[in-house]
Length: 379
Ligand code: KG4
Ligand code: ZN
Image (cartoon, rainbow, N blue to C red; front, side):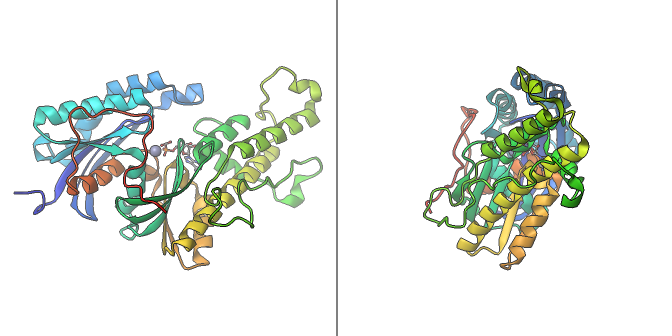
């Protein structure tokens, strides 16, 4: 039977960063069923406060076979039941990607199956549709992860208008760096969100508290769609603003000498002060992302906004986006944390679309640290 008359079953691998993941998915068009998803997170990087590339590659190397075996077992499938082996081949840590790409190609070759390389960010675009049947094009997408911040108008699957991106730090990266400044563990996003929620209100801050409001980066009322920063974001200045506020707090408590020749950390600052800083940082970042996304949705008259990437776990962002979207009649769809952060289910879903388009990769498929999103159209 041809792939057109029965559902296609995809086995997908994802090893672009610090999760080793495999999934089995079958379906046709937008009717896709996730049959299994295994995600092994590499906790070892917490010790180092960030992902150590060689350690990530080696951890993928030990985990990849058992993770794939478990995904097939959970789906009650064998390689013989699979139509295509999909694997993330860009963007990401090259050494980490190479493990998945090599393993995926070997599997496909030994089983006589086609292999299909998938762009990691196209995976994030598809993730929410696995849980929300309405999260399908046309929609405005905001992808916010540790390595990328992309604002995309999705006219159809495979037709993407890249409207905006970060000029420097990604949203997740900004969270992780601010977490480090405040003495919070890696990955910092959830810790900063939790700490921000505990911030005292203005009346309780007392004298000498840091300013509660940081400037909104690249957000000005006089911007117009013709300006090249109308949709772009930038978070490195915001991070520096947090650093300066931390330094001011440390100086006020310990004297100027405390700043000499040391890496300044806010780890020892009182909790209400750290919480106030976390809240001010998050308010600025969230408002910027919400306004830029609203600009895109209003300009292209989209009724749906789809969030993706690890920062889409942030409930403050999701709630603020939903409230802003409601003002112009749009609905916001966010994935659950398991599908927001890196996983192979989203890679399988993107692969199903590409496979049905007739795409296949050669066995020479390579891995790349960066690569433009496929399907870009001019705007
Ligand atoms: O998409 P992802 O799992 O990996 C990449 O492709 O980068 O995103 C990881 C990022 C990290 O920077 C992490 O701090 C952030 O997502 N993150 C959050 C939250 N949960 C995870 N950021 C803000 N608030 C959260 N609740
Ligand atoms: Zn990701």
